[in-house]
Image 1 (cartoon, rainbow, N blue to C red):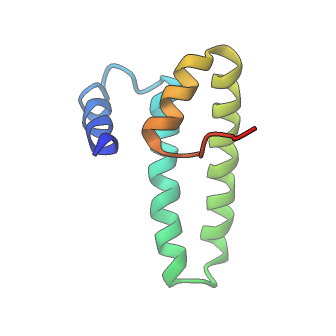
Image 2: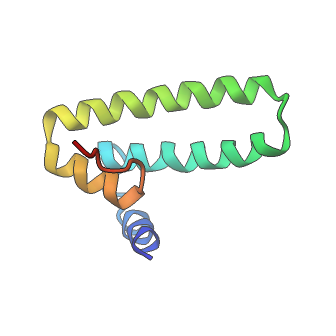
Length: 89
């Protein structure tokens, strides 16, 4: 369980790194997963759908920033949070 160990490491360093890009992406990912499970039960909750879209947009912008500034940290974060499949070309 790589994801659980990553969560515990981030939780321990929460006070230190709350402003880091990785931590913000981690928090947005948790919110997205929570809202997704909520919307599976409540399909017509349009306000939550709007909130989910806003959070997804924020996370996309942070990931774009991180990929431009530090490719190594970006790839490490993507693999640890299990966000995307590697592109096959």
